[in-house]
Image (cartoon, rainbow, N blue to C red; front, side, top):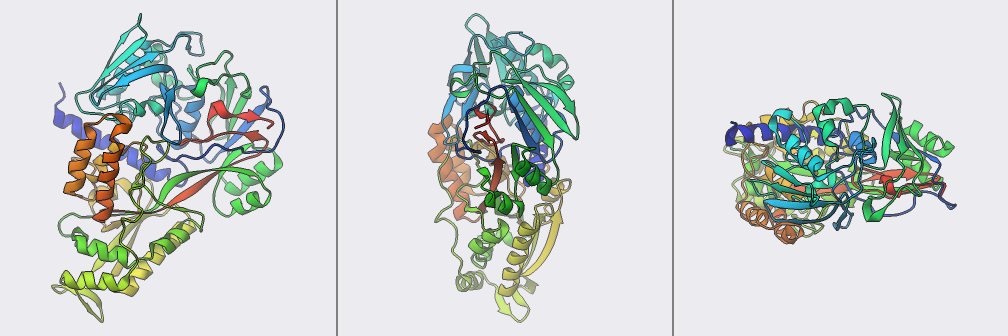
Length: 538
């Protein structure tokens, strides 16, 4: 039998993979990317439930196996084929999905599965199917990357078929045991015998089934008749008959295809947005953390000293850096990484970061024993030096923001060394500790999922990459873990605020990710256009 220590090591490895996915996808959407508002994406007209909607995607999704996929594009597409137990709106409110009701504590939950839900082959989706999927993902031998993300660690599930209930228990507290299910794609039990077989096909519980897969080019989804268990009671009545996901890697090409009508929806960022905005193409925007600093506080790093961290932040014009990073289109960050749809929507950032004040920064360093000379700030014969770690894949605006930060620190008297990483080296570099300042954000929908990054064991035994040891955060997050669901949000906000005030994390700006649409109306959530909201010809 596996020991608790063995489980912790496996979980740490899994979360490193999750972070790698998030970092790689931060140009577009990650697992827990961001929320937006409900608005129209096109012009007037009548909805056409027999039409085709074509959605542009920047890359091939890879595997579409619902228990194995974590790439942002795959999660978007899986949402068209597989339904969820519950849904969370962008304001944090929960609504029924396949589960018509539920109860929960921090270590248990019971879901009542609505009658009449089927997979695409007509097989009923039962409580036994849902319990089997929980247990499949929770079994470490299956190596599902969803463990700890959508299914709690140490989860066990049982089913009462007659009562249509699924009971889930955990040994380790999971305060958002219900909210986690927003990204649990529901499959019929027989598919768990060979889930890899669903990599390029479906046996779906959602409104669409995959009918054609041409990797690298397009994926065609066809509406299922009789779908009636969508969010808010949504049915298939007015949804388009066909949804095609078209791989279009070049954003300029995608913009051209939107303007010409070859695409109905696409995620477009960068300079092409100016053309689309000028042509009055409809747009929905989602938010994702973009400008975001964490420090390496391990022994031997100058940034272990709170006075140094505070001075480094005071030396930066965060507003200017955030504007450069997002091309002037971003919004001030309000969370330390929780993104919509999330049950916790409070502001833990505004008013809690040190203000831009180089004079105060100099005073703080002087009080901490540093001396300013011709070569910059020194202490005990050592010059204050920071190695800043950042992604090499986020485009020219992001690169310019890192250069601006380096210039402001250099002008202040800090020696700056630059270290750029790509998606394949981000996690290993963070785990190695070979940096002082990181610009790599972590984004998740639930605040307890951030605790592993900002508290607890450091690599190789955990994922607290910055070796943060904030006693207030530790105490408050422990209290919050004992409160189920949204009721714990005030405690989580206090915990997050403790990290910001101590300058352990510095959220600067959120980037607006634009989903442009023409000839279609739609709503968006953290994954992208919501399938039940699509209306062609409107």
